[in-house]
Image (tube, rainbow, N blue to C red; front, top):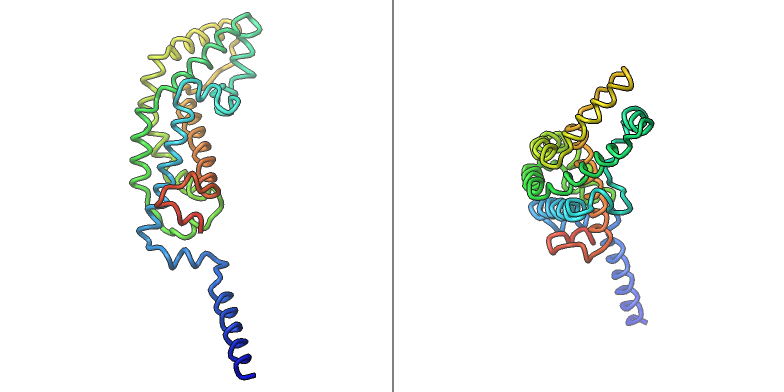
Length: 231
């Protein structure tokens, strides 16, 4: 009987120990990893997400047709003004050409954009590692966007400005505006360079969110430093 009581006591102790050690709040991650390891995991997650976004979109037919044209730069704000006017007068080919050349521009910026993302990630200040690690599936990218969107938007201006001319976008745009003025006096206030830079950045950030979710949910997308996302 005494032996049985000892065995039961050991079982009870083991059960209490198990349930008391079971992590329900993320405290296990907090205790197991140092802040330095957490920061590396977060920034490596961002680096992997940025690389994935650039590799998907800044390649041939990336912005224009990747994921069923989900990221295509289509000048939607102009559909009911400039585009409709030109289509009605037989110049719809110019609208199509503007869209195509703009997306080709965006697809040929990888070498210039990659260092901008590297700089933004390297200089990102993180104030609460655990909140990002234990946040929702896109918490890290959303945090990055909050603090680095304006930096990247401004930094995108130079490569976009250069390529507007290289890829013929400026020439097509000027021809469209000239024709538009012949058929209507309605004002058109539109900044092509800012629009293209913002659409490129928004598309890349959205694709980063997709990759972050995969990193959190699929172990094959994690490097060794990101293993804590699986805890």
